[in-house]
Length: 193
Image (cartoon, rainbow, N blue to C red; front, side, top):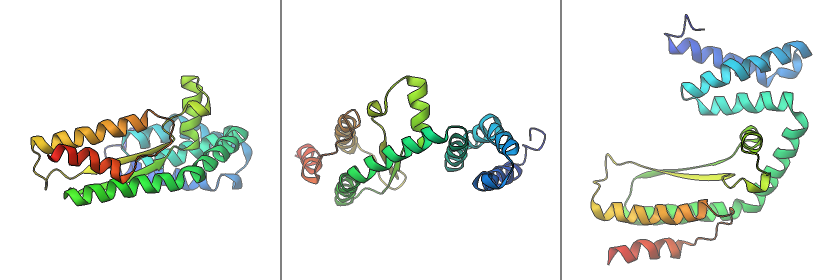
């Protein structure tokens, strides 16, 4: 792969091929499954991460983790899904609040959200020596602004700073998202005066 890595398309094809193999892992003999997963851990997942294919990276890591740690994967995934179903309405309300607020202010943006993957949760538990209950970034919301079309002035920087500060307070909390649209508007409207 190092010799042919000058053409990114070849690397992408290799990654997609391995991703397909991992999705059909159970069809291969056990020793070949182990070999594929070790190659994913050592080569393909880091490569996907390095070239910015984070979705492929996550899928590869989850497949390998599920193969080598089936019980841990099942346990983490079950808890993760329970927490997601418990907080889904709050997360949607939060995203809708931010969306409405930013639309009203005339910003151009994209809102993305994610739920931490089973592999990522396990990796954090192992490396940081924390419990599942101590993982505070199980859910994440990212707002990506299009600054090319929005003239950035001092006032908007102050508004965004206040919004960021409030979001940081939530981020450092316990995933209990209780910020209302009114509270977000109050922060920015106070700055408008």
